[in-house]
Each structure stands twice: as structure tokens, then as C-alpha cells.
Image (tube, rainbow, N blue to C red; front, side):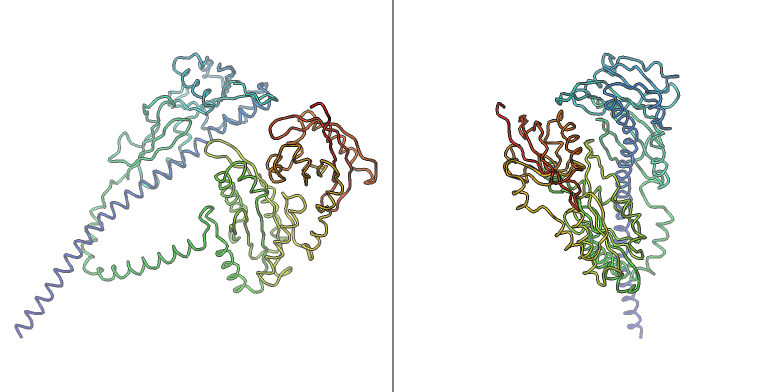
Length: 581
């Protein structure tokens, strides 16, 4: 009996020692992981909030950019500066200024800012910085410096260049916004503090300086902060953050973990294993259904969601939308795939903003997107659809370049126009195809027989075009001067290799082929004749074209016009180059 008790005690002690050692190791690793987690969380917050600060800065830069547009549109004149600046100014802006030839001539508000009327280029402190901005054609920042109204300011200077008809650019001067710091960052900093972090924001004082100066801080110094940097206004900005409560777990948490260790050890290990397995499966499922570029659902995710809805809601209504970017291949060819990717991400964000839950937004491949709107008929969903179609599809890259694109959309109603997901998709695709045939950049609802009707309405086949255009020629819409077709002779006159090369060069617009001085005159004459009888005599005209290599060719042309059910008024132009070029 004593021996048996001794074995039980020894076994119990052995298990206790083993579990104690095991838990001690686990506790140590747990504390280490906690510290690493806190550190990783702080790094993540530093990175996230540098992004927030960049967006805060972009608000200030946008003020200077808006004034730049006023200067350019006024061809260097700003006769209503005070009125324009008064409409642009925000609470976080100390003043708005313009400096033709680098000399500050106008400030809003002027009161208290009279000292800013200076020659920036020849100023010993500001001169090297403005020279840098002019030389590199970039927005620069300088500061922080004390404002007479109190607080600190950062000068945002945007160099403005005017371009003449020949494309020659001339430096005009600067548009300037004085940002109040830290007012412009107040919301971001308040949010950061609400998450339990202290911070210090500092910046290099100018693009030509490596010296850092503190802009804002919740404390004068931080204990082992983590930092993230970003570039804005050609300056390097550094955000340092540290937890308000320090980097270690609290004594209470430590005591609680010791007291609970013996009771929860096995359950914790089992739960952690099950939870890890569950989360891993969930992550893999999300990855399988998500487009990595846009973050939207992919084709598989879309089909799964639609099938699930139709199965669980057999009597419900729904609307499906297909859309894509017009001439996306040309965007990639002209600007590169990076810009094409930016366009896709921009469109994904725009769609997500318009089509809110429970709508299912997806990228189904390439530049193609789909939207499934459960519980809504097409009539009910049309306000959202038309809002998305009319939305300004414009985005600006980190380098400050702005790009614009258009989209085409088709949609159909379930179950009024389709009984299955496959039939619904076919009908939506037919509606989108019809938009493409009718000039793109629009949206249209499916009607019965649309695909057959669209193909029949595509009234000018290549054979007909070749017959109508015996020499060098092209077909265009008189309403918007969009080029629908150009034959080989005309493509060669413009010095392009083939029709695809021609489309990339012209972007499908007659404006990009005709000489700028002739375009308005020729289009006015053509539109005047376009409403007449299609059997009328040809309209003779003379114009110049600009080739891909920049040559100018004198052309004599004849144009006939006809009305088309889908394309409106069409012009068939036959042209011949005049001798003596």
C-alpha cells in the first residue's frame, strides 16, 4: 500500500514537474510573443497612420494644385484671386498665395501675412528650395516655422508651367498653400491616441536638408519607439509611436496567467490547435475567392455567392451587372501595366462605394467586373447603376499624374429576364456587348433578342466600308468625332503600322489626327451637312493631318453622311494627299 502510494505521489510529482516545466516554457514564450505582438501592432499602426498623414497632406497639396489649375486656365492670369482663394481655403490652411516669377504678389488672407510678400527665388533661405522645385518640376515643402497668428506652418509650393500650342513649357511661378500644423493632422493624431499610443512626428526641414525638426508630439520623448517614414513634398517625414503603457504586459495579467495556468493548460492547447486550424481554413477559403489586386471577390467567389443566394431565395428578385474598362488594352499599351493596375484598383474602389452591401462586387477577369444586387429589380437598382456609369473615373498616381478612363455597363433582371444564373449571365453579357457596339461609355439594360439585334444593327461591315471608301479614308461619328474605322491607305498616310497601331495613336478620336487649327472648322462644316439626305452630293473639304512622327500632310477630301440606327450620323470620308508636301 505504501509502495503504491509512493508511486502515485511520485507519478503525481512527475506529472506536476513536467507540466510546471512545460508551462514555464510556454509562459516564457507567451510573454515573448506578447511583446512581439505589441511591437508588431505598434509597427503596423505606425505604417497605417503614415498613410493617414499622407492623405492629410494631400488635402493641403490639393489646395495648391487647385490654384495651379486656375492659373493655367487663365493662361497665367488670376484676376479674381481673393474670391478663388476664399472658396478654396480650409480651417487647416493658414494662407493661400501666388508668386508669379517667384515673387509673392497676392496672399489670402492678407491681414497678418504681409511679411510673406517676398521674392522667393532670391531669398537666401527659400531660394535654394524653390530652385529645386523649378528644376525638378515637383511640389516642395518647407518648415515647420512659426506663424504670426500662432502655431506652426508648413509651406507647400507648387511650380506652375504654362504650355503654348507647340508644346513648349515656360515657368510661370508658384501657387502656395501654408498648412497649419498640427491642425491638419488633428483627426489622425486623436485616433492614434485613442488606440493607446504616444507619438512624435518630425520632418526634414526642406528637400535639400537632412536635418529633422519636430512637427507635433504627444510627449517630448518616447521609450524605444518604432518608426515609419514617408516622402511628401520632397521631404522625409518620420512618425514614431510607442504604447502609452509601455512594452511589457501588466503585473495583473502576469499574476492572472500564473493562477490560471494549471487549470487551463490542456484546454488552452486544444483550443489553440482547433482555433489555428479553423482560422487557417478560413484564410485559405478567403484567398481562393478573392482577387489579389483589387481585394474584390474573384469569379469563383462571385459564382458561389450568387448560387447560394438563388438556392436560399428562390422567389426573390435580383439584378446583375457586367462592366469593363473601355479600350483597356490601349491604356496598358500607352501607359504601362502599372497604370492599368491602378485603373483597375481605382474602378474597384469606385464600384464598392456605389454598390454597397448586400450588393456583391467582383472582378471576373482582366478588366471585367460584375455586380450582383440581391433583392432589387432592375428598375430599383437603376439609380445605383446609372450613378456608377456617370461617375468620374479619374485617379492620380503617387507621382502626381492623373489618368481618366471610361466604362461600359450592361445589366439584366432576375427572374423576369432569366431563370438561371447561366441564362442571366448570358443576357447581361449581351447587354454589355450592345453598349460596345453603340460607341462604348454607357450602360444599357437587356431586352429580348438584343444580341441578334445588335449584330444585325452593326450596319457597316468591313466589306461595305471598303466599298464606300475607294481611296484613303475613314468613318466617324459626327456627334463626337469618334473614329469607327480607317482603311489601310489612311493608316499608312498617318504613318502607322496597322489599324491597332492607328487606334493607339489616335485614341479613336478625329481630334488627334486633324491639325488643331483645322479641326473646329472641318467638324463645323461636316455637322452642318450631316443632317441632310444621305443621297446628297459629297461634301468637299480641305484639311491637314498630323502623322505619328509629327509630319503635317495637306489633304483634299470628300465626305458623305448617312444616319445609322445605332450610331447616329456617320461620315464616310475619302481623302487624297495634295502634291507639294
